[in-house]
Image 1 (spheres, rainbow, N blue to C red):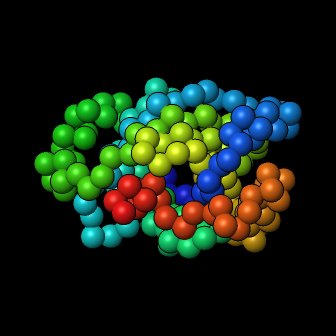
Image 2: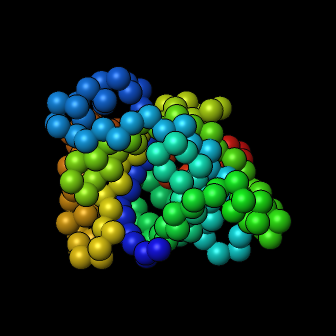
Image 3: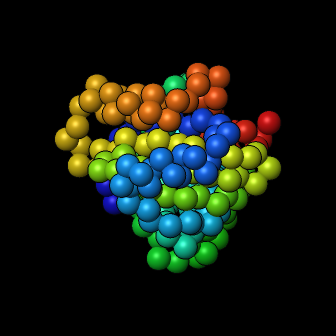
Amino acid sequence: MNNSKNIEIKARCHQPKLIKETLQNLGADYKGLDHQIDTYFKTTHGRLKLREGNIENNLIQYQRSNQQGPKQSNFTLYPSKDPQKLKQVLQNAYGIDVVVDKQRHIYFIDHVKFHIDEVNELGSFMEIEVTDLENNLDLSSMQEDCNKYIQLFKIKPEDLISHSYSDLLRK
């Protein structure tokens, strides 16, 4: 378990196929398609979700402000070997707030993670996460990396999403 930070954006994605092709042309490391179920639990401090997928299975506690454009997120990951049992414990303790069901294509270029998501009831999105797992990058260089990819993918300000998928589903 580690405490980490990232700079991230979420944006509506009007051309997921073109984004995937661009990532492939950049030599991105494609991890695969992950069907993810994110169960958010009721909390009074930050957010707590259990991610169940065929690639990623983690309990994730994080804090992030709701703002458009690049934003910092502080998070703790706990790998889950038995997500069903963990979900039951958390559901009994906290109650379920909302469930997000998505198909996620996962790519990496160095310390930058890219998601091309198809979210049930919401549509197509793209995420860019400049991650510092070792806590040795400064925020300004992480911000520069994020902005570089925003420009490369020609993400328009009006396509940036300030809230999480869980918030959008609750509306």
